[in-house]
Amino acid sequence: MKRANHAATPAPKVGFTDPLADVLHPGQSIELLKELHILTRDGKLNQDSRRKLKQVTHLCHFIEPLLDEVLARQDTLSLADHGAGKSYLGFILYDLFLKDRPGSHIYGIETRDELVEKSRALAARLSFPRMSFLSTTVAESTQSEQLPPCIDIVTALHACNTATDDAIQFALAKQARHIVLVPCCQAEVASVLRKHKNESFGKTPLSEIWRHPIHTREFGSQLTNVLRCLQLEAHGYQVTVTELVGWEHSMKNELIVASQTGTPRKNANERLRQILQELNLQELEGRFLAPVPRLV
Ligand SMILES: C[S@@+](CC[C@H](N)C(=O)[O-])C[C@H]1O[C@@H](n2cnc3c(N)ncnc32)[C@H](O)[C@@H]1O
Image (tube, rainbow, N blue to C red; front, side, top):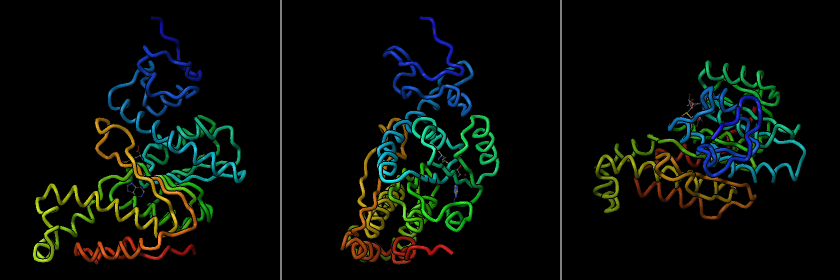
């Protein structure tokens, strides 16, 4: 079969024999995917890129209705993507859903200067004027004057370790309507479980759940997300937890989508406190029960 030249044209409607069919969105810019080095110069996709593109495309499907919901209420939309890396997510969201919506703006927040510089250059090359990139930590970005006081949607795709927790604090401070998280491994809870293992053995048979080191890591990771969900519910978010893509594509696959309802779950804080106490994790109260940071 003769393959079309994808260079500067939107993706054609692809047939089921096309190897890109299951990962491309109709109308998606092939040029952008090449610029992001997801596709090779001759339009091919290697296994790693296929996996990444599949994750990001799938995540975009979850985010699209949230963009629509915000833009149905107001003319403007701001989205902050934390731990943006090469900003695959931001660029693809902009390309698919926001390039023709003039009131929208995407902010990528990333600590690695070279990635921020590259993203700025790429946005300029593609003429994506409503994308900005900040070279700062998630935590510091909360007070950044380069960001508006309110942000409608906050995303964090595999933001390392506690950067996801900082993204939650950012979202609360910025009164985000929607928060979309695909957490990376978080080592903090596991390390505190480990530190208090002996005390826990004497206290509760449940400590068998995290007795073996691999279980400490896995349980710590799951518990972290449970605590994050309770934290969000305590702040008036309705939370949905699901799988992003099949486990064969990524081990870090849990998707947490939280939408502000204005009605906090009544017992969420109490539950949080009880769990921390039961598992000897009281020193993490500051992480999950902290008040919303004030904007200065
Ligand atoms: C695993 S990469 C994920 C990148 C991108 N979200 C993706 O899924 O392709 C995590 C990124 O978060 C950045 N990062 C880690 N901690 C951060 C922090 N505290 N503030 C901002 N960026 C952070 C890292 O530099 C890295 O680029």
